[in-house]
Image (spheres, rainbow, N blue to C red):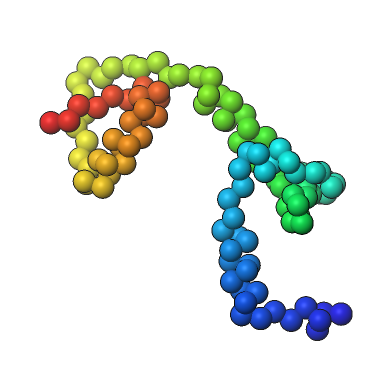
Length: 111
């Protein structure tokens, strides 16, 4: 009965922890498909948990990751480089991810 489903404060913490969970590619590989509904969603089980997956979003993500792994953007140099103003924190992020920027055709020179 519905009254048997009373939630307590501890349940809030458990729910927040479950919603913050990050799934890896290996988790998806281990999932067992239970069914499909509404012609666009897959119900899958991983251990004791059930997941509702948007089929189209999953397909788009997989295609994007394959494209990203196999394609390198050819750089088209500017006639005159454009200066970019950035905070110290933004510069740190760019430096940390410079290989990704370079794979996508961007170069930078610090002044």
